[in-house]
Length: 267
Image 1 (tube, helix red, strand yellow):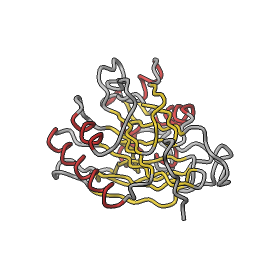
Image 2 (tube, rainbow, N blue to C red):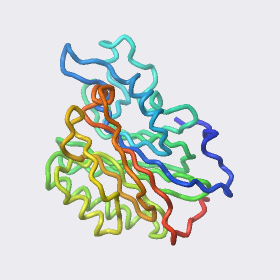
Image 3 (cartoon, helix red, strand yellow):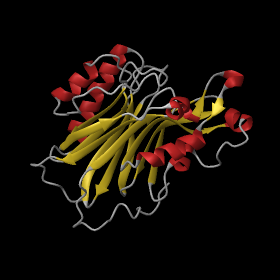
């Protein structure tokens, strides 16, 4: 799933990016609508993700394969969705959360910068919902940025326990002086999961950016939390085309490294 770094991402350690653009997007498995009225949107999603021009794209509900939908849609891509959606020059990382009768789906990360290593951590709270953390270490101009892609559960108490597991994972597995991004679909109509992360030293942009439902967004289910990065701005693409592609809208934020952050060189 790897590709060479894009010309937009120089590997020279002397290069310092002015900002880091991060997007998170629940793509609804690349299909919109129900039953015979459903339509394949994966091709449009690929074009849309490229237009976001993000350094890191965190995706949820990504299909690795589905036999039933492959048979139904003649233009179903031959590649797994994470690889298909990766713009030219990006690396794609995918891990399965759920295995179903006809296929499997999970979280993915598309990175303009080289991926040092990646792994999956199971944070499932009960047998009816399979959830996981995709953890990737990214080499941003010779410095490490840990990126965690998450998709939390539908039940409130499950989400709180999953955030506790995320906080424990960060504490145990990531040095406190290294930059961290936690992004994904939090499924939280309130702010308790956000409060727990802020208590652990994470921050996000101050203004709200509603992303769900895409037809008439009234709540922000999609969030980006950072450590040793400073939120600069955030936006949600809107319009008829964006409303058609998924039940969520993408969330896109621009960040800079914190002024007092001592970058740690990757191995």
